[in-house]
Image (cartoon, rainbow, N blue to C red; front, side, top):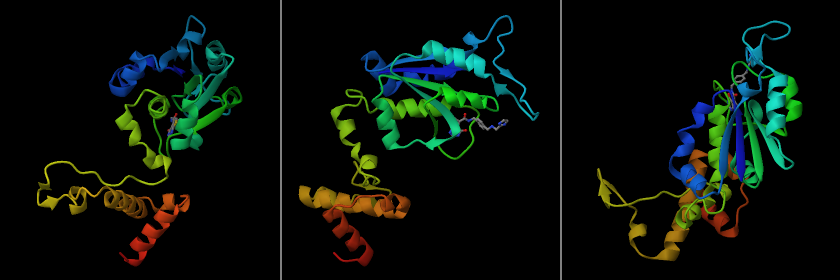
Length: 241
Ligand code: 21W
């Protein structure tokens, strides 16, 4: 997979993409990551990338002609163009997975107060990372890249990818414990020490449901319950064992 990021601040991406799992994925050739400086497509001598808003108002607006040239130069025959925007659909597991299937992803980051609205006609979709205001699209693009790259085959080890089925299943994870058995007076649940794998599996499934009910109840509304989950949820709700 190739990912190109169009930004006025390519330097922001240097260390996040040179550490840990993303670094390893690049070294293995699983993803090719490039940043493209939008300013390279602004005409000399001033290299102006933004201008005053028509109709007046505060702040500057990024110029559509400059962005258009940068997009055109980076676009290939199979390119998916995403614009990071607070007005986009909010990123989730399914969208990250979908984008990880693209051959070529081109991500546009805005900065300053915004971008000329005609740029929307040049992109496939707008994606937000949540309902809060950032200073630009760069951090959001890093979040999207991180979430997508970890879906690429070979990026995560066998163990790490086995953990992954939590959001895929639409529930939160069950709680994890390691040594010591007692920490600050808090014990590891007895069942995890029992060696009874089937009971542990069921306990974890129930904890996963309980966790979701308590922390993210809205996830349950969309969840497709299997029979065992229905039974365990009944046990939780009606205190039956
Ligand atoms: C913040 C851009 C506010 C536009 C004209 C004058 C990308 C983001 C961003 C930003 C405005 C994402 C205006 C969650 C985010 C991003 C920078 C609005 C008003 N127009 N996901 N003033 N939150 N943010 N401009 O902020 O680019 S994805």
